[in-house]
Image (cartoon, rainbow, N blue to C red; front, side):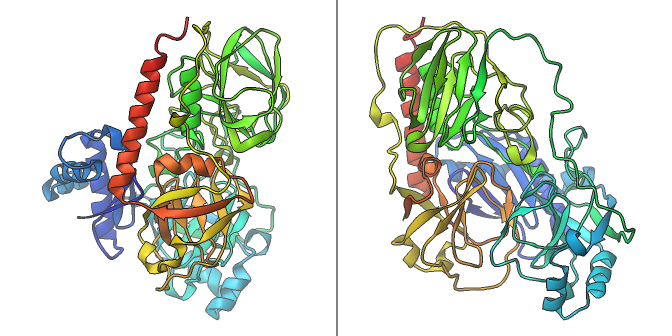
Length: 555
């Protein structure tokens, strides 16, 4: 086993250099062994191709010798002997074959002609070769239920698009390098689209969320019937939410703001099905705001982007605003509100995203263990969407006041600025990009959302070319597509990516990304993994001190 870091909160265990069916069985067996071992600090386990990604909380990794990374490696090695993997493999050796109907070409496959031109084949030959092949599911990621399929005929291999599309329709079947796959929901994407299917790749009502699992075989069946394709239904809980109950405590939305959602600290344990963590883009701001009203740090609040909502309080309460500064409410101070009181948050005057915490927390229905909203997948929050006029947001029934007058030490807050230097650890392909990126300045482009942030600057060129195997990514991963303009992944980012990884933003500096607006300038500064973990643990100590200091400040 070969271990490499994936940022400062994940590691990759590589088992082989070549993709094969036998190696994939070893990968799935290792993932099961690690998942069942219950190792301290481990949050997610994701098998993919020849490796297993293990996500962890450095502050929770068991042991006292060495740093979190080395301690976790020792724990994995101790539980993942060849005998244990072989036994787990034998007990779970199941194979399934799934047939998926595809409409090729036309509006359903706008890149079919381009693939044919690149390969020197006719469109009919592309369809025949693509549909006659047998595929193996090597990974599930990028979006909920998105399968990465090996087995693409070598004649069809086509490099990814130089510039990814901002919107790929749900159900699109694409080719990216030597792989093929299916987009379950509308999302950005850089693969060439040759067809579409109406199969539901991800469904919240199934026992297994994803239609496909790693290790399945897949066959595509061409559909020549001339009828309009029905795109897969958006992954949403709107049609099967629990029956509404009478709730006295809550907020009424009078104006939704630009992009306001319910967020907590995220959902974990479902990356293997392609479900991202989501959660607050600036988790530190939400944590502080929650502490300021006496809540547990994990409770849900509102994330407001650039222009905040106008809300009416249905009952008396205690609120605090963290993160960006908005017109209408003082930042990082607990504020008492009364029933019938309205607050219009207006425009952000500093920063980009603000977090409104209310005593008792927002109590929308949990989805996969979290109340966070994943808009692209239609999961969590209020029906998986942004707020609308007239929405009622339920709150926990808590009556809480503040004892005395006080404020928190500004040293506990991130140093937001419009030209931040963001600390990073080197990525898997970081050394292939030379040294110039370390001194470069990058502008935040308007192409930024909860999934990712495109930067612009001097194009970053990789010394070695060729397509890479898609591999696990995480919020903070900086990918470089063929056009050389970096993309920084955010909380709603895909779980698997295929572009080179130059670096990873360390966890304590993620808030600097969240508060950056289009036009702001970023610089990158490399630190070691040990330094990143020291900064992580120092932050957690500061939060512990803040909680302790405020323990008796509420009544």
